[in-house]
Image 1 (cartoon, protein in one colour):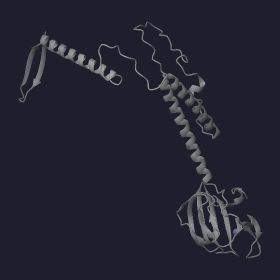
Image 2 (image 1 turned 60 degrees about the vertical axis):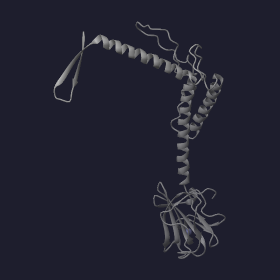
Image 3 (image 1 turned 90 degrees about the vertical axis):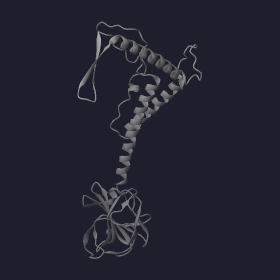
Image 4 (image 1 turned 45 degrees about the vertical axis):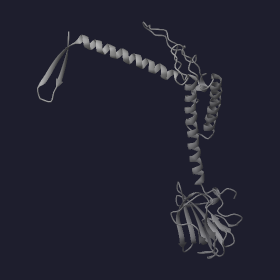
Length: 297
Ligand SMILES: [Zn+2]
């Protein structure tokens, strides 16, 4: 029996060397034994090192010490289970779509929850202890994952809801002012004929602050002949508000405002008979009664 090695040298000519296999096997065997010996010793030392400062070959290996007792793991697991149920209930209450009942609530967790199938055909092999898929730490990890998912869904839904609410003109744009003219037909104060009033009028002293009824972007802040100094805010979803006859503007076109931001001061500019705020709500460009939105009116 011979072992053939083909080696290509610096020259283009190939050289073939023939070696007897017996010395090779001997060398490989010695090398393998050395590797196994050192590797095994190193592995054993590494495994024992954290538990025992001085490695001792004579002493029997001790069981691995867990950082928690099983009772502690059980207590944490129970708290997680409660938290998971609470998160699921909270999700349902605020209408999160993905509210599946957690797996741990459907069936008790444990190794008897599912019975493994017996092999259908011939089977064998050494009898080893069962590997539990739901070890205490594995179960906690899975529960944590589900709780994190539920909390993320709840937080996302809550953020969307609060954003939607922020964009509805529900906040009174002026505090402590008297409502002097409602939405609808009325006698025009200038022409003294019947005319449509497209908003609400709040009488207030000049210089009274005017607040944004909802969050949005200032679509216009400037002067218009009839409205005088006026602010128009786009709230998205086709909703907009208008604040007219101001004496002073506190925002600029393009500025982002949150509900309650001071945007202007009451005045009597434009087509106005005295200091007041003329407030409009527009939906898709059409005037609607602001009372449909304003809270406390
Ligand atoms: Zn008006």
